Figure 1 (tube, rainbow, N blue to C red):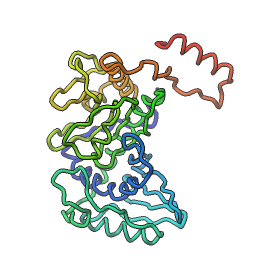
Figure 2 (figure 1 turned 45 degrees about the vertical axis):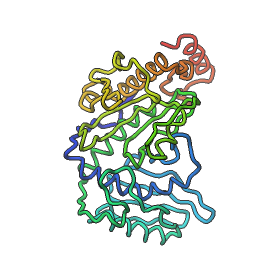
Figure 3 (figure 1 turned 135 degrees about the vertical axis):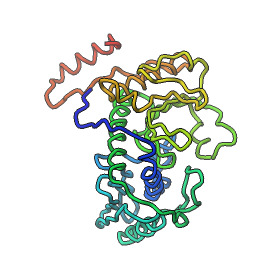
Figure 4 (figure 1 turned 120 degrees about the vertical axis):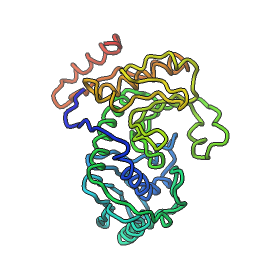
Length: 325
């Protein structure tokens, strides 16, 4: 599994926090359009794609226009691209409120209505709406570069981990509310949502799932790294081996955690993300009865541009006969 083209950025929460907090808020502006897309189990319809230069929404197809919003963190801009043209605005704004005004003006120029909801979601202590968030903001290109590097490294591993899963798996991406990069595997098994949680979280708990992801951390837990959990949470997680040195079960958080420095110390961080995810799935198989045969043999590309069809078919037969190979 190649690491070519993927950096190993060192992450310090205190350095990243101001920029990450700002980006978390402004990506919600374009992210709000995803709420009007057809609902996908586990809110797969809301994720933002990790691009080479930032984050992007899916393409929104409306009766009178199609458009997409791309947050170019490496370029310091936001581009709204539609079949009617393109508008760009800077990420350098003195507040979320001024960014929101500029975004809505640019969208209107393209015949795109502003998002239906101006509410800021899942950020404790924030003002209620974008218009009310007038706190002074500064833009740090270095922090933005580190964030992009981390997202691309983690996404490379998570996408490789997801590839062989035969069940429902929304595309790997950033959930713009909680601002974590996640890969989720679903199993059609009805569960009982946690009482007292917001409606959107209860909707996400209607079926069993496994989530493996990456987070920059928070003020309460200022530690960037990978995380994972199984819903519903089974007993016995405290005694599991999570495949990568430094990965441990945190019972207080209800998470398996792999700190970012421990990940970077491994010979191949992308492969280590896959190994970490496989260990979590193995725990779900052993402790929660998840089907082992829902993961087909992992193949690092068929290289179809140069591999004869009969050789591909032979490799597939061999991998099914010897799945541990």
